[in-house]
Image (cartoon, rainbow, N blue to C red; front, side):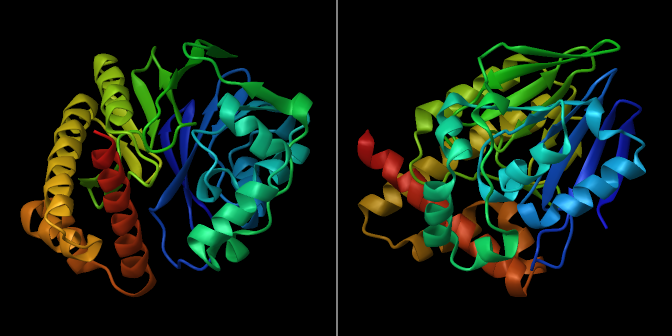
Length: 302
């Protein structure tokens, strides 16, 4: 069962439990409802029945959905979109134009996910294609009007992925950052910069989000916080700090594992690693190594 967090009458957080993980508070889907409804990020295919159950529990009918919005098309956020779109007769998928070919024909995305994530995609479920006429290419500044005074503004925010976007509810000062502002673990921040990563894109995206002055900041991983600007500025500072350490350590011949040890010594936010174990710890260490590889790759380009 998906846990539902009621943020406001028009805004809900769906706390998704990933298959095989055995814990919550890692991946979020966000549901907005005016006269029409939109859901941002919907998790892997295996969770589609639970997403549909949560929507029913909230009393939202499937024909109400105008949009399924994807911050990016990594499997933990978008793997179920081809399955879910068949259940929402009026909905269109809003995603970056670079995502379009992979949504229409997900074979390459599926193979790349298997190569990167091992057996994890098998637990998530096989991707299904999205019909081309059901896809809207996201444009920077695009406004998605849900009625009843609720509008979501699209911002292209490359960094975590080249096809990444964020959403801003300007009237209520709510920012859905996806992974443009990194990851929040137990209130502690860390970057998420898998290869290929471009530092200038990541920092420019953070600058854009800071300029919005959002009151509430919501992460794909995980949760919503009221001190949005403060947290965005902290992520900007942290990203620069990590980049500089990784660049210096890479030039000194340090391995990614050695660099992770250096980061744990320098950045107290990584203390959360001492509180996790098993699958969760393995996943975090794997993602952190990937983050280091992305930062190292960016450093080599400068």
